[in-house]
Length: 110
Image (cartoon, rainbow, N blue to C red; front, side, top):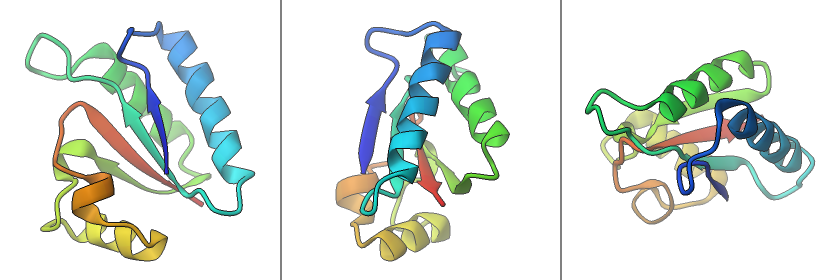
């Protein structure tokens, strides 16, 4: 699993997308990595921040290269997608993916 933190310090939208593109290329070129964990923060408004929106939109644009997207708030052993990703990648939902967190997004790369 590769973790990318675009929230601390917060990156501009363009810089965040550049870093995400670079990280995606890195994972797709790896024989062992399949998970991209993106720390984007949740924003101060209580509705989700700008970086969160940028990440979720980026995931949609990259859907041809992504097997599944797991919002951080769903990263729990009770979520079927989280269990599927963890089982396929040989990781633990609670240790590597969780606990649930509105400030992150998990991307399972093809």
